[in-house]
Image 1 (cartoon, rainbow over the protein chains, first blue to last red):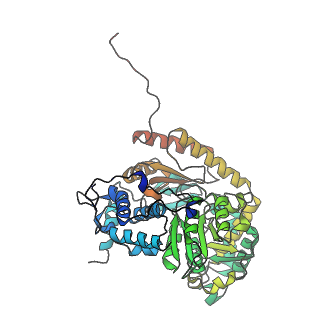
Image 2: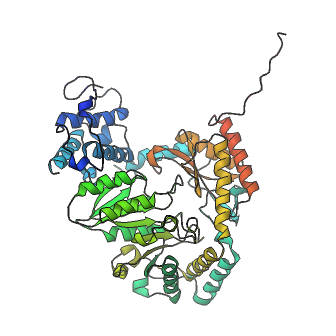
Length: 114
Length: 409
């Protein structure tokens, strides 16, 4: 699946990985700030298995409608994204999120408030 | 758009299920004969899916207590505790459960579902934080929908996942309430409760444990996972049900919090529903006495669990992660699970089938629940039947084939 931002194939490189370590994470600065492109890329990586047909997953993709993902799998994906980006997204906030863009903005917004 | 159009997807899936010729969600028990046998479709069936862990539904002393209560106090209370008053027996039952746990307070509910729904949604409100295990029961998820608190899920049975979520809350104001279950109802696995409690202590979070499936089954005296892991005093709220080990229906919550009784005038699922009828209260009180007086039932249950779990594992079935009164058998997909279930029914054995979205991680399961009253012969028979069906359906591999070489000598 191509990167919705750049059109290039999605690759995860080492500098984009965020390592969760509960004892020391709060005392460590993440090596670099997650950019919007990083966040969208990570979301798309999680959503790729649920792509419906050939339609690419983009920022405007409505997660629950345009893809084959069910509500439980959405909640599980959110749980993984929470750990990747070290934020918590309350379930009532998740309920208001429809598109990939909205999910990315929520994560970035929560990160900026940490 | 019609009222039912939104359920079109579910309806389609349900049709799929029924194409097997039997509907697992509308089984008719024509006559229940004992805790382990019933007549279904005109045939005597072995029951291995009833949550009747101690087999007390037919305990003569519990049945007599219920009958006597009906004669003395009638069939129902016809109203709620707050509007129509409590019967003495409601209060005695609450005192006895509180005493059983060594806690100061107990509230009894009409179902276990209502206990979770009401207590959890009321304990936390606007500005508070509710943290739930990802595999929580539907009653806990429904409580989440009713509260104004912020709800966050953590990975199933993973204290470090809970810890990272409590850590992220930092110094945000608001109470933290963590919801755990003693034994999870689909795969029969237990929470690492001591580790969870340590995390909760570190972050000043309250702990509520639902012992629905572990009451009677776990702990030296049957008080559940809180007792077996030695953290009874650290669990602020313990919820449970009368509908499994105690063989009736109803729910409860115990706590030492001095203000606990305010819940009687705030929890709506307690206030606005009719209270338990005298017969149920009487049989539950007697069942609790039986649980205390007959610890051998717990041993029988775990012996039976070992027989079924180890027997199925030896045949190559993929099971839940540990011994438990619920034995969940993993099957590759929904249709195979339903086909397997149907084949079991044809062979005279009733178990439950659990398919997405009622299961964690989209797994499809045959859900078996073990009873202290099962005989070893019944369980051996079940293992044989499941092995046969499992081989026919290609879920497990057959015995080593004999090599027959014909001709060509």
